[in-house]
Length: 155
Length: 152
Image (tube, rainbow over all chains, first blue to last red; front, side, top):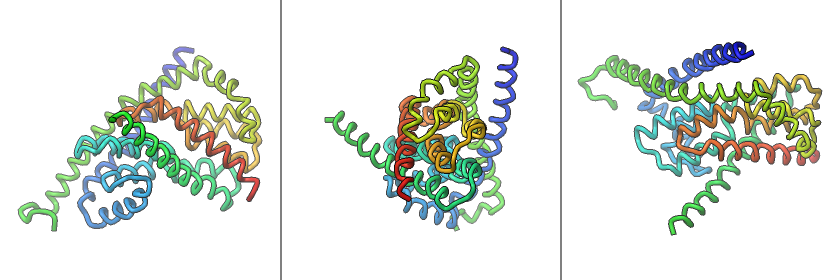
């Protein structure tokens, strides 16, 4: 029984690490190579226009885009990288983490559940559109609450 | 345009490639060292029967979402393990499409809480607070969806 647990842990860890490795390395290389290019900046600026609505500025656009598309762990990886490089304010990190904890890996995670039922626009609406709107709402509400608490604490 | 004329494109590309690889390896290591122990904890929780116990405790909540009590199992499996495991245990239930959507919303918002919580903790956030937030926000989103679906 215990041996079975250890076996699951070892094989599971290996496939987890392999998966993270195969996703993280390309993301980081692509970011590094294209970060300075006009095309990349255009994509980031376009995304920044959208996430500005939940209180995120242009510095947070790239990590949120990575998390939104690929998953929380990968977005978190880019957040940690950017904190180290150019000192992201804690408020921005908080907003990113709330937003990404509500919605991430938008394509993969949504498809996993959409595959369970016959396709309909209604299902797509609830699983994708409603979830993103809910994430934005929760992010705005919590940012307001956190801002209030921080201001109260400083007084 | 943005590179000094003394450095060729090829050299710049190779430099970026090297920096990217290094950043990738550093990030990989950072994720690995929090994700693997967290994954170990999820396995132990499963091994000692904590998932089944929590699912039994969550059964009464399911009626708020218009779901059978059995739906608590995929929900808790999603919280502790991940969405793939949750979908696996959902297949055993016979849920209608609206029920699948409601349950999916709760699981999509809150899942893999221990491993992803470890990553959030690494970004300087409180993993426990974020786990609680995701469970509550997911259940509320699902309950609202259940409520509103009747109108469409």
